[in-house]
Length: 228
Image: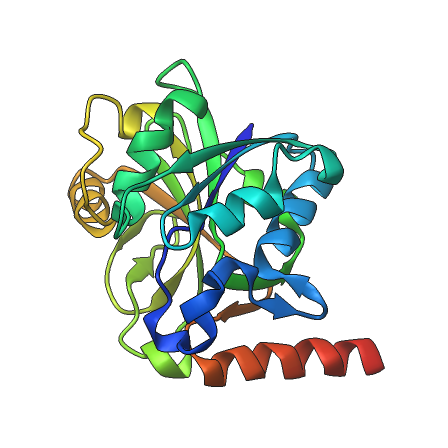
């Protein structure tokens, strides 16, 4: 399986930190968020990755390079000013993520920190489904949630859980779509209608590093874990 790390966001709520440093290169525990994902995906057995970028993309490309120093092979998908949002970024990179419509690839958001076993992220959707989403309990900053998870593992739009940003998608879910600026939510809504998504709860600590306050929370978590 291949992986894609979404790293194109501007990070407005992390300003002024992100005025000169792209959000994926903000550090936790002495490493950029992007490096945590690269290394943990590698340790889970993934050796080929795609990283998209837009804001300060030259820094991301320079940091990750071709992946050799991390023991992986990295392809860069550089987007124009403003980026293409989540679905648009995936569609632009799709030629690097698989050949057959049935091929699967894992996606993680670079602006999250996940203290989890990344091997659990490699679970493919069932044969009739287009995506497997990994969900977390609703955090304080997103109490309204995104999805409901049924007992049979099906995922539908709702409010019971929050999307972690990690998911496994089939290439065919995006095949034939234009690489334009579009988020994933319209796709989720369509797949929900067609009963084409399954889901799993993410086991472990998860942080959306979207604000300076939440950045300090994840740093405090990691420091506390290292001290214990």
